[in-house]
Image (cartoon, rainbow, N blue to C red; front, side, top):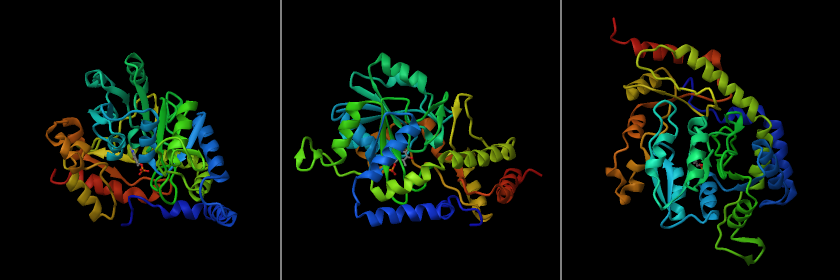
Length: 371
Ligand SMILES: *Cc1c(COP(=O)(O)O)cnc(C)c1O
């Protein structure tokens, strides 16, 4: 591929000196689980989000799962989730014992459609779990309104939205708690798996701290049946370095997105992302839509351009949820999105000068057969 979809090596090379120094610091400390490096990252990431607490955990899925456990949401409960999301959002709910109840997205923003929420609420509903999909914040005010009216918790899935803003406020600080992922490809990515819970609620933070560490605060004093889901100090040290560059790197992504928006406007049948005026997305991915998506992806591949599909199968159509009879449920908006979305190359190290072949390939594809 001359233009790969994702470049994970350049971020390391740009910060090599600082990252290598952090690596040596942790390796030479002789301390490899919990400890000061994790404490410092938690304080720094909480401050970044403007929130009171950050609790580092093993990954993004566990962040969401531990929030649900800490809220004592479980068997018999329902949690409203987007119909179009990465399956981890649903899995977190399923692992808690509760039932994920899908709501269709807004057709323009691809985020949870707040006008459909009321119809999905039953007397078993305990929480709404909006996702800031593709790095663009969900429309939180109407979601918060409904949650307050029905006394529901709000859990943000902020895995794709480190640094995104909704009406000036940072994603991850817009509900009762947020789950973050620092999977390598995320905007703030570790060099392995990592995640965090962010919240302003002291009790909730405390519960998650217990749950991530076998249910104990003091060794061998186990208060609850906890898990082993901790963010390694080695990853915490890497994330502390990269957090300093997050805003600048998000800005570089924004420049790529602006370039795409400028160059791809008006191309026949190609639908570009739509950004409401209150949203400051961080462009985790840049998603276009096309009725002949598979053929477009093939044409780009032939031109040496890597693309991905986020996501080709909506969770309800996956084998994992076949047992709940969800495969028969019709969620037409999510299904249409799965059939038409295509993610173009994106990242803080993508050279805009090198993207003309991509633009040309899309233009040629759009004009094919039209002479
Ligand atoms: C990446 C991601 C997750 C899961 O995070 P992991 O760290 O990979 O477990 C959850 N939700 C969304 C929307 C994601 O993109």
